[in-house]
Length: 231
Image 1 (cartoon, rainbow, N blue to C red):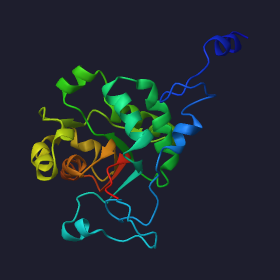
Image 2 (image 1 turned 90 degrees about the vertical axis):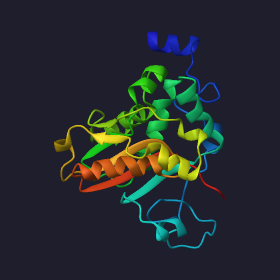
Image 3 (image 1 turned 120 degrees about the vertical axis):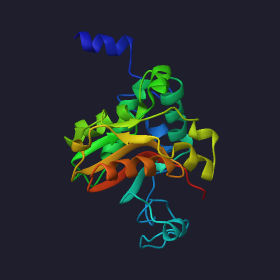
Image 4 (image 1 turned 180 degrees about the vertical axis):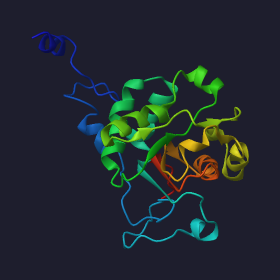
């Protein structure tokens, strides 16, 4: 009875557009998400303009091998996803973490990992923002797939300039040597799925992967909510 009364006076709203919904993100906003489908690069997950399968290596991954086994993203970083991620990260709308995390959880087809590890924030950035969006997303995924979530062992050693303001090689230099595993035993011979919100150039997740592999991880996959794509 009380639940019905609360729903009548305070109906649930879409966390993106604030229209009344039954639950989660409304259908209109969901239609604004461009999901990433094949064909795509078997390593970094970038989708190809051509719709002709099968999946294959992209030019960048042919030229330089990535440290992670593969990276996948739910959708392209524009439209609804871009708006939602900005609202979550920069406007503190943490109510978006659950529906966005569920999008990722539903999209995750391969779940034979031992551990989920969110990309960490430096303590100064964490203090400023009040939360780590990658950890919030990771919690939803871990709960849905019954996976262990380790958010303490992989750490960011120093504060860096925001990657969003940098390009190409600047991003790589900005995060070089920034990550470290404080408790190596956590990842020895483990299959780790690294969680982040956006894949841009792959610089951040590559550095995280290198730290995890150095700590003894058997395999590292990367899973992000969105990916920057030039189509």
